[in-house]
Structure formats: structure tokens, C-alpha cells
Length: 198
Image (tube, rainbow, N blue to C red; front, top):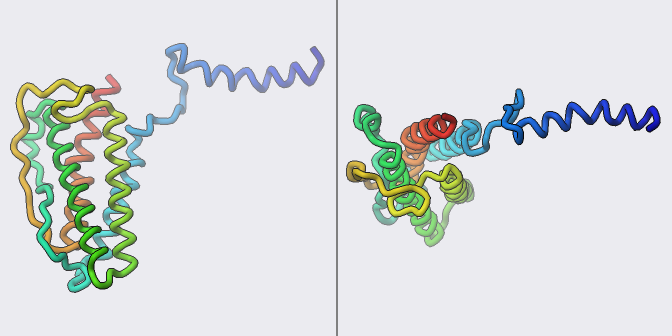
């Protein structure tokens, strides 16, 4: 083997070792986080939700919905939450996420049927729909799902009934979306990822 071949092996060996360490059961220093447990992923969607919330703050006529839309109550009783099993928390979060997704899809339909919806509002509705779909996929990747899922056993006790509110405007809808992501979803993902790392 010539000088060039030797140099190539010297340069390549550390790279090969770095790639092989995880497969040998040795954590590689500086290895990236799992995408589903990387807090930056959720923070991106929280930022988008806050942007939509800020854009619609004080918005009146353009943000009015032609019907009331049911959304999850985003308040969290921390004492109750801590006593819940992770499967119960998962069920609670899945119910909230499902209802919120339906609400935003319904709002998008209502606004599309309105005489004129500002492009900026349509943009944020589309982003919210896309974001909630991505977060649903992220939760699935954690393999923690709600009741009846083939992945996770049915909880031994049901979570408290999901509390709901009525949203009469996009401003209220986007505020609920923002609070849900910053509240229950963030709490649950943090706990689920900690349990998964043990």
C-alpha cells in the first residue's frame, strides 16, 4: 500500500470508529439526539403557533368564525397530571391533539368558504394544519399512543374526561393551539422521552 492509501486509512479510521460506536453499544460523544426527543423540533412548532397567535391578536372581523368550534381546555392541574400513568397522559394528550386538529381543519374550511380570507390568515391556518400533522407523526414515533392502540396497552384507569371550550374566532383558536403545545404536549413529550432513555 502506498503513502496515499495509508493517509486515507488514517483519516478514515476515526470516522469509521465514530460510526461503529453506537452499533457496539458505546455512545458516541456528541451524537445527535433522536429527532422525536430533540426539544428543538417541538420548539419550532411552538414558535409557529405563537406567531399565529400574535398575528391574530386584536383581530376582529377577519378572524370571526361563522360557528363555534370545540377545542380542548389547555389548563393543566399539575397534581393530577403527576399522579397519572404515562399511558393515561398519552390518552389525554391524544384526545386533545385530535380535537385540536379537527378544530383547525374545520376553521380552515369555514375560512375557505368565507367571502374573503386574508392570505396571511390562510397561511397560518395551513401552517397549523401541517404542524399538527407533524406532531402527530412525532408522537407515533415515540410508540406511545392512546387507548386501543396496538402499540401501547390500554391504560388500567382512564384519564379524567377531556375538558373543552368553544372558540368563536381564529384568535381564540390559535391561542388554544399555542397553549396546548407549550403545556400538555411539552410536558408529555418531556416525560415520555425521559422514560424512554432509562
